[in-house]
Amino acid sequence: MNKLTHLDEAGSARMVDVSSKATSVREAIASGRIDMSREAANAIAQGLVKKGDVLAVARVAGIMAAKKTADLIPLCHPLPLSAVTVNFDLDEAGIMVTATARTAAPTGVEMEALTAVSVALLTVYDMAKAMDKSMTIHSISLVSKTGGKSGDWQAPDRKAST
Image 1: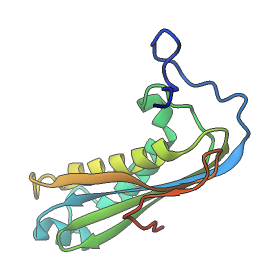
Image 2: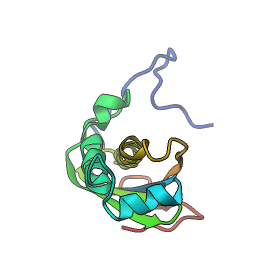
Image 3: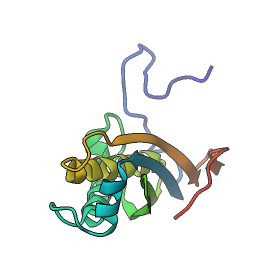
Image 4: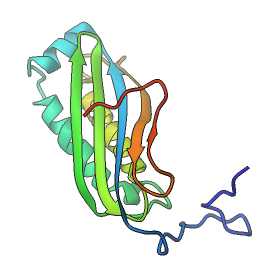
């Protein structure tokens, strides 16, 4: 079993020291889905939600969340993000959200991409909950990552899309 890097010799939580790691270009892609009624999905697609443009607000919320990941997730390093994108794929049963985060840093951006997806999905829920309180958020996961010492990785049963 690998040594847990967020624990010191006494078993106490710590932030990993990445000061000796080389800076490299890194990218992570994450995705997640929210299922909803056909009526709610149609209203979002047609821009008819009373609170406003759901996708525009969710996109900005996801980007802002990626930038705040180190404030939200204990022990995450603050990273100089060079790009964050949040995209939506709508169908009659819901929305798939895909976020891409990029940086040149000594540690990866997986948490930033996952945070962007999570908050974008929560924002969709918040803005459309008056139409469908039974919406379900699920399948939030890392799709792929590139860069760093451990190299590139792709989820075996998922394909990266931007």
